[in-house]
Image (cartoon, rainbow over all chains, first blue to last red; front, side, top):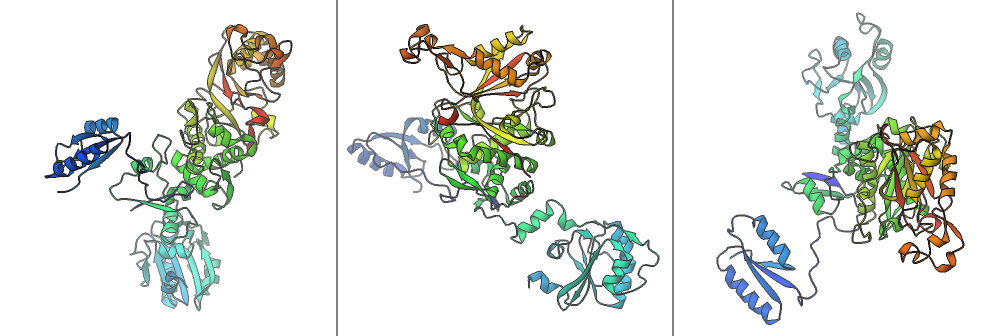
Amino acid sequence: MKVVLDPTAERSPSSRERLARPEQLAGLTVGLLDISKPRGDVFLDRLESLLSQRGVSVKRYMKPTVAKPAPLPLRQQIVGEVDLVVEGLAD
Amino acid sequence: MSAHETTLPADGLIAVVKRDCPTCTLTAPVLAELAARERLTVFTQDDPTFPESVPARVDDTALDVSHHLKIEIVPTLIRRVSGRETGRTYGWDRAEWERVSGVAGLGADLPAMRPGCGALNAEPGRLEDLLIRFGQTGLSARRVTFGEDEDEIEAMFERGWSDGLPVVPPTEKRVLRMLAGTTRDPKEVVGLCPPNLAELTVEKVAINAVMAGCKPEYLPVVLAAVEAALDPAFSLHGVLATTMFVGPVVIVNGPVRRQISMNARGNALGQGNRANATIGRALQLIVRNVGGGRPQEVDRATLGNPGKYTYCFAEDEEGSSWEPLSTDFGVARGVSAVTVFAGFGLQGVVDQKSRDPESLSRSMAESLKAIHNVKLAPACDALLVVCPEHERTFRQAGWSKARLLEELYRLCEIPGEQLVRGARGIEEGYPPSVAGTTRNKFRPGGLLIVRAGGSAGMFSGIIGGWSGGGFAGSLPVTREVKS
């Protein structure tokens, strides 16, 4: 077990905090990442249509294989193109 | 009664030994003699089979009992009565062993006295391990546990604890060792650290000093720099929050410079010296981690400057004919001290032709007048770092630092006509009413001189300051370095 001493003023939780969620989607671009699991497309297709109905712009991405982390170029592409990402984690 | 207390015999003699110690092996026959007479328990620190002549041996290679008994030297002989220690001696000293054991004529073949050896439980590293194992560190910072597969360096980046470069993981052991660099209580509050005005303890300073890469002997200098920066006169909150370039520049004077091998000579303001690099970095990490001062948050710097990673150097007192910077702030020569200055970058003063002080001081003054903008006066405080070859010119002409300062102030008097808006085709400047007056580039006391640098090169430097220089902004602050 690797234990270190907190160098901060300890005014926030010691666990890493999640990024704050956006309050609304208007004006943002949402990335939908298919991790190449069966039927992930069904879930993401439905999300895309719901988001599009609300006027949110959507971009679609797909990992080459479910067995490995997304390749760096794909991650960098997503970071450069969208404000937030939704991915389907399981079938 | 602790767990170890219960494992100790309530009555009888206890010896703590190690085979690696010649005095312990020398006393092995004496231990056998004592064991034959009464209850003797021998705790062995390194080899549980030693001493073979004593049946009641206890394996203390984990050093728990030695630590509990606070053994510093082996062999140590202890007498216990009804669960309490009534006598102790260490090393081999026949008279002392006879006193503790109550047996006369011990070790007749041995010399009267032999010093012992250092106990393993007191060795650096092992002692820290034992304090951690028994929860005796006295450290109160929150413990943060990383996952087994998590890389510590990456984990610290992820938590936002880094200035952008890797930091050293502040393990309990490293922080304990760091704190050995000072006699101050880890719980002592050094001050409230801007911008969040968080309580800054000696322990938190030590944690960040570990992360910056400091050695324990640097800690008193880091503490002095922190105390100077927290002085309200330095205005650390403003120095951090300003859109201007500045950050704390740390200048070290006195014997501590050489004690911790700081660089005051070639490349003094550059990379490559551990003390210079890590002391300045520790101060910045404290502002970031304890104070919560981060770029694009409270730190609103437009450009910042590379010195905001670290900006610390020593004055070359030995090579200089002038009084050290710290003496300008009332600290006696020969006393270690740290001065913090809200400064940025380095502007060169290149003059390879001047051989008399009048010409060279004019060169310096013209360069000084360019800080921030040639149209602004007073502009900011400044630190003039005079290189050895330039100082030689002044020294040979008999110019003291005070004389040079006097001359620079005289040369930095600027006619108002040159400073009004539109003059020299530059809109920056002052209202027309300034015409007909004279303004100085620096407030009284706002120009500082320090001597540093390599022996070759006629290249001095100017570290510019914050536009709120002086009482309206940041004042340089000096603090003595205390152990």
